[in-house]
Amino acid sequence: MARKSVFLMILMTWVTGCTSSDPMGLRSSYRDRVVPPTNTRSISNPPIAGQPPQLAQAARAGQFGILPGAAVSQMAHTRPAAGNYPLLASAGGQFDGRAMPVMNGRPGMGYAGTPYQIASSASAAAIADGVAPAPAQDLKYRGGRTIRDLKYMNIYVGDSEAWESSDWRSIDKKLAAAMADRRLNNVLLQYFDNKPISSQFVGSFFLTGWKPQRVTKAELEAQIESLYRQNLFAGRDLANTVVNFMLPKGCVLADPNGGSTEDSTEGLAGYHGSVRPDDNTIYYAVGVYSERLSGGRTNGIPVFDASWKNVVATFYHQLQEVRTDPDVDDALESPNGKGFLGWTSDNGDEIADYPISEAVDLAVAFREVPLADGSGTAPIQLMYSNAVHGPEGPIEYPHGTQPPPANNTPDNPPPTNGPTVPANLPPQIQKMIREWDQMEDYVKQAILKLLS
Image 1 (cartoon, rainbow, N blue to C red):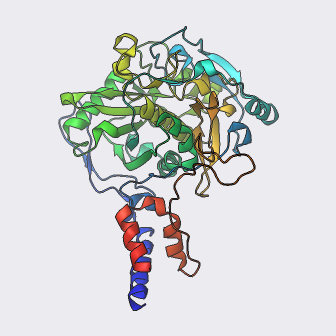
Image 2: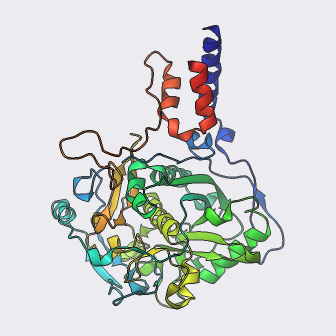
Image 3: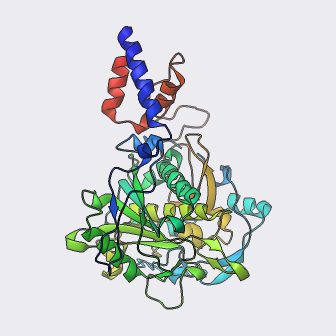
């Protein structure tokens, strides 16, 4: 009994320390070295943003057994604000402008450059409830790579003056929460044989010394290779890691296909790709600070009431596309994408494309969804689900494990993620056990043994 009391005291001290406001406890453990490719002088700065305390404690943050929320028509959400803006101006009418190889049929027409009015709350609700299934848009696995256990880092282009701290902190926190959410991940499991997937946020940084007003794909990839040469990515699991480049307020993103007219002021929000220095592959995503400008103009796709929310939704879109179809650049350079495409539709859409291209009312696809852990909401874009032939999420159980009618117990329930929380334990310990999924297995076993 004395041993248990001592252990509880130590454990309470550890939990309290892990969730304190000490900024160093929230920072990543290594320093970045970032300079423009044309600059020969290295600039060294500490990481700017730490992971939320609960994520910082787990080597496999975001690894959940998978549970989840309700289809689109049943889902509680916060509706984006109404307003005019150009919708999907990029090639193929896609949010990210990457015209993927068409496998059968013909490419979707898209809505290039056409302004639409987001519907009122009343009509938007009817649209969401009445989304028609579109089996012809189902995704098919083409034989390329997918990423089950995905890692990502956030790089904020510009120095600390280019970003409001409230923006990057909110982006880091809410993107990590959305990527790790059990109910959102349940929609994705159908593309991974209904086996667990994970995401791990590995830190965020300022990219100083580069203050672009407009970014082309070539310039961005030159920056990525420069960072690689400076060993910023040394020791990283590059095959499963995505480097997110957040462009600051006012920066325009050029058409990734090399066009001279279409850019983020005409509906482009971001895209993903890869570079291959020294036979290594570095996966990346890039996105703009979507906002409304004067004179009715826009940069990106400003759906939500705050620009940081648009950034989170943009990178949620991109990360799920990388997860299910990472080698997009290789696919675009190969006939029909042979050997490189992951999950795409016959029309060349990735998992996040059709939910936008079919939606005149973007409130169908863009939502603030309640998080499964009860910590609030996260702004995301719904993904395409083959199971319902349209945008879906979050859902309570992975498809194929739902409870039978009039039965609260599924025939094939997901594994439980932790023990019952004893009511007589201190509040800090109860909270730690509720966050059971975020611990390493050996830590769980040691705690249970010492509490027994």
